[in-house]
Length: 135
Image (cartoon, rainbow, N blue to C red; front, side):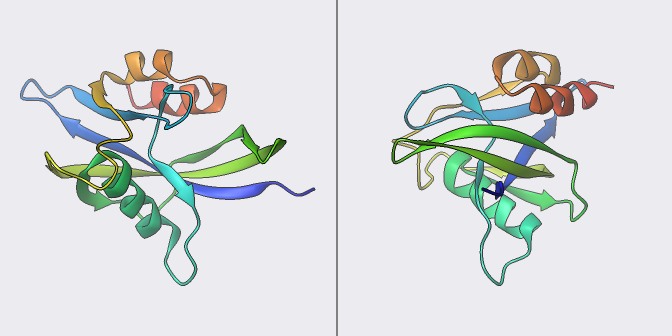
């Protein structure tokens, strides 16, 4: 079976001291830290779909870069079947963080340094992408 495809955003912001921060959210079921992601949207560019997922899951908006940052793969349980999902990742420069957002009752969100975000997520390739932001 071919891999399925999703899109994701890595929301980032600069603190007053110039250091970069990364926003992670918890998954709905396992409550582990992840980046906002979802299935590709028909007739919507992947980077715009990733930005929309960041709004729905994390309550942030901003400028999403059209060029992909990278990819990672993870295993997803769906209807008792283990599926391999390829995720195309885009960087989202956060300009607005809302107190109320669509999935606020289903997820937690928190800002991390890139290194701490890399430690918080499980997927090795995502860890690599997050560590690369720490330069």
